[in-house]
Every structure is written in C-alpha cells, then in structure tokens.
Image 1 (cartoon, protein in one colour):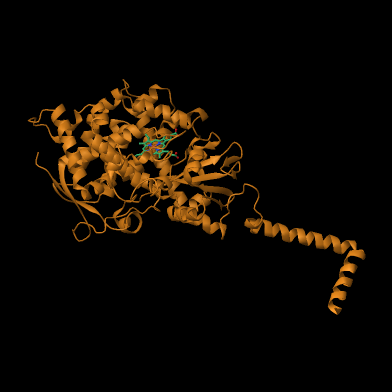
Image 2: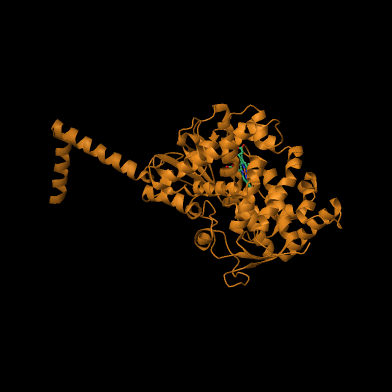
Length: 519
Ligand code: HEM
C-alpha cells in the first residue's frame, strides 16, 4: 500500500510538476540519440512496410563472405528467407531467389547489367585504371558490344576462320605428346584461350604461340586480381592492384601493336581486328572489345569444356553416343579414306552441321552447363523503387541472383547433382517446369550473345578429344577418382593451376590420361 501511494505520488509529481527546461532538452536529445543508434544498428527491430530482411552480424564480415565464399554465403542465407539484404561498404546488396525473384531480376527495365558487374565482380580490366581515356560512350555499352559480337559470328566469317582454328588447336594438342597425362583445367583451358584469341583478334597474333602464352599469363593475373581487398577498396595501392594495372597496360600495348599492324595492311580480311577497323572503330574501342570478349568467354567456355570431358569420362553411354555422332558427321562430309589428319577432316564439316546435326552433344552441353553454372548474376536498380512480391527494392540497390537457385533446385531438376542429359528430352523436359528454370545462357533482357561461338568451341574441343584420343579420368594414384570430383562453387575465377587444383578449383584431383589414336 505504502509503495502504491509512493508510486501514485511520484507519478503525480511527474505529471504536475514542471520539468526544468534544460533537463527536458537534454533527456530528449539523449533519448533521440539512443533511438537513432538502435534504429541504425538494429534495423530489424523497426521493420518498415515492404522492408527486406536485413542480415545480422558484422557488415564487413558479410561482405567478406560475399567475396570469398559467395556460393555458400548466398545459399545458406537464402535457405532461411527468400530475400535478404546486406551491405558491401556503402552499397546495399539484395539477394533474391524464387520464380518471382528471377522474373524481376532478368526482365525489369530498371535494372542495369553493367553497373552490377563493374562494382561487385572486378576481373575484367578497365582502361581508365591505366590512364587510357575510355572509348566514346557509344562504344562502351552492351548494345555496341553485342553488335560487334554479331559481326564476328556471321556464318561466312565462321566458315573462313574454322580451318585456322582447327590448325591452331592441333598445334596446341601436339604439345601433349602421343601418350601421357594432362590436367584439363590447364591444357583444355589453353585451347579455349587460343581459340578466343583467334576469334577475337587476328591470325598474325593467334599463330604466334609464345605471344598467345604471354597474353594468357596476363589474362590470369587480371582474373586473379579480383580479390576481396581490390574489390572492396579498388583505390588502395596494394601489390595486387599494381600488378593488375601493369597487366592491363601490358595487355593494352600488346594488342595495340597488332591493331596498328592490321591498320597498315594493304587489304583488310575477315579477321576480327580487320572487321572492327573497317567499322571505323578506334584502337581503344577495339582493344576494349577484345578484352571484353576474352573476359566474357574464356572462363565459361573453358570450365564447361573441362567439365564435359570429365562427365563423359564417367558416363560411357553418352561418350559413345557423342563419339558416334562425330564419326558419322566426318563420314558424311569427308572421305573416310582420306589421308588428311583428323583436324583437317573436322574442318571441312560445315558450320550448320556443327550447329544443328549434333543433338546428343547439344543435350550433353546443356546438362553440363546446368550443373556447372551456379555462379551469381548481378544488377543494380538504377531507376526507381521496385516491388518483388510484398518487398521493395530501393533505387540504388545492387542485386544478386545465384543461378543455383534454379539449376540445382530439386523441385525443378530430379537429383540435381547427377549428370543426366535425358532430363531435357521430350516426355521429361524438366527445364520447362516453371518459368525461367534454365538460365545457363541468360534470359530476358540480357541473353548471352556469345552462345553460338561458345557452343561451337566446346563442340570442336570435344570432337578433337573424342575422335583423336583414348582417355580415362585418373586421380593422383592413377585410378578413376572416387568420389567423382565436385566443382568448388565458391571459386569465382575457376582457378586452374595444378597447385590450386585440389585446394581452390576442385575437391579432388582429376587428370586425364590420354593416348592419341592412330589415324
Ligand atoms: C559456355 C560459355 C558461356 C556461357 C555459359 C555464358 C553465359 C552467359 C550468361 C548466363 C549470361 C547472362 C548473364 C546475366 O544475366 O547476368 C551471359 C551474357 C553475356 N554473354 Fe555469355 N556465356 C558464354 C560465353 C560467352 C562468349 C564467348 C561471349 C563473347 C563472345 C559472351 C558474351 C556475353 C555477353 C556480351 C553477355 C551480355 C549480353 C547483354 O547484356 O545483352 N558469352 N552469358
């Protein structure tokens, strides 16, 4: 009772007695300060209507995980909620999943493709980093780039380039010897790089193998320079950043020399540099384009060629089907008694046959890409606040969508970790379950414009490999690797050096023991 009257009294005093104005102001300021601190430190306590779940924990650690273990980071958090946001320094990043999420991500006009990759991906060199003035704005955009890609992929041009592409693959494969062991993530990547240089520059450069190898070294310096530190603080003069700038400059100078050489040629031909010169493009624009094609193409084409060889080694039925398909095309288009070597015979198969008459290889590539492509696609919302379900993605936010959300989703693909190209055949067509369930070539506003050439290159490599070699997959002790190796999905660059193969690129070592067939 006494307590109660004391409380009543105190309360009455609180209500009735005037507060000294200074105390009031101080308390209000202090209260406001506390509120602001709590509001910004624990925004989850004050959810706004349409607010996206804010990831707890220390924000720099979240950002660090996003750069170092991106696949695990997104997958673990997206298991708990379909959408969440976190901060990469002052950039808000929204990770999203599900059918509605990917529909907005791939189709909404507010989302900018280049902005997303520029800040959160790194890797590809930028000429302004080495104080070379960028090409004019109209020669920077994706649509300018895509027009130039289309120019290189004309059927007549591909037909002209095909024989020299095969000649160069042959030269590089000769380096393996008649019998031995190769590491696909080095040796097959070499082939893809070689082909990319042939497709995107000129024969004078691509046939100069030591220079191509030098370019390849520069390329890997640039790929590996996308470390969390260089991405988070790109202005920091770290050794990696200095190495990146030097490699960019060296690559620029090397390519510039070849562009100049082609400018001095009496007649321009079908080489990529010639076509771009004929279009009136500046050296800077041409070099930017060549670098763009290299960085867009090499990693994906390379890793899928490697993985496909591994899957075919583990799936004799598909290996046989594809081997037969290649042989029957050679028999159809070339003389089977011809003394010509394999690569010359393959070079006479016309482009439409490569594109349309290899249904089994097409299915196997489709399945290999589904299994391998679990990387993160990026965008930035540059226009206005965006609604996804009942959530609002604020203007300025970055967005991240992991392809694994569709490709490794057991509700779409039965046993998603198993290589099973039959899943795309009539009657099953698992990729048609739901919308946008197959994303390996992109979709919506930014489908891959290099698909045609990437597929052709993978097919050429598989044909040369299956028809030219007997091969087995072997582990460190020479036996078929058990369990079958898994990709390290956190490895953004698919590092392919021998030293890192078991630590970064792969859980287990997987070489190919190869023996050249008598021809
Ligand atoms: C196996 C090889 C390849 C795969 C799996 C692949 C996959 C993809 C994917 C998934 C996208 C969409 C990315 C997104 O939405 O964020 C894309 C876009 C793109 N790819 Fe490829 N790609 C490959 C090879 C190439 C090559 C060789 C080139 C260059 C010649 C290339 C040029 C492009 C371009 C320019 C875009 C953006 C198109 C646009 O925004 O309009 N790709 N690719």
